[in-house]
Image (cartoon, rainbow, N blue to C red; front, side):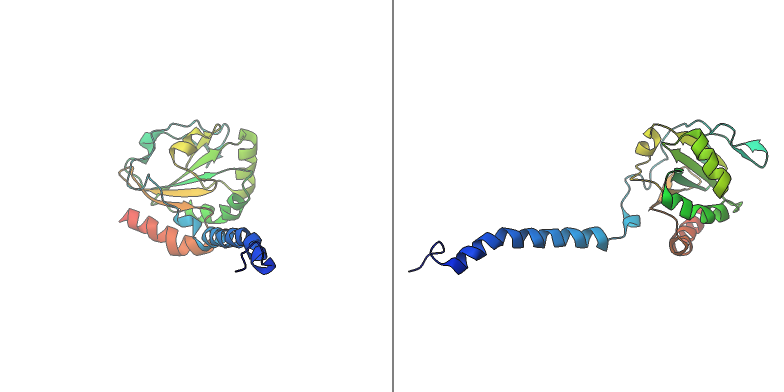
Length: 192
């Protein structure tokens, strides 16, 4: 009887087996990584009240000639709010800016920005160049508020109902596709 150590062909398969197993596992990881919709990442905060985080205003940020206030937890009561976590250094934030400017014109809701780990000057330049759609902007310089909101990375957008409860979370940028098919639908549901 010939054993695997004596058969050169069988020996090659034994050496190749770990590589084949690794390749299969790597392929499974790639399929899971690229096959899922990152905007559907779960949030433990859905159905829960907004975090009780107060954030200072961006200095010298004005809208319609009035200083834009910082974020306070009581800002959510009685209003349907769309909260966008953004940063000046975030490329997808630049791409979603025109859609947020359009959304900021909707008088039925308030658009709130949380500026994530940014300098005030950079944030002001960003809003000066791309437009300021926000009624309220809180500066989250150390990222603590983003942690409390359960942010995976910028940009992320939340819809908050009139009772101050988070009803929806969009991970990633607002795009023309998800703006029409998802975000507007979720906003309308919150408004009803």
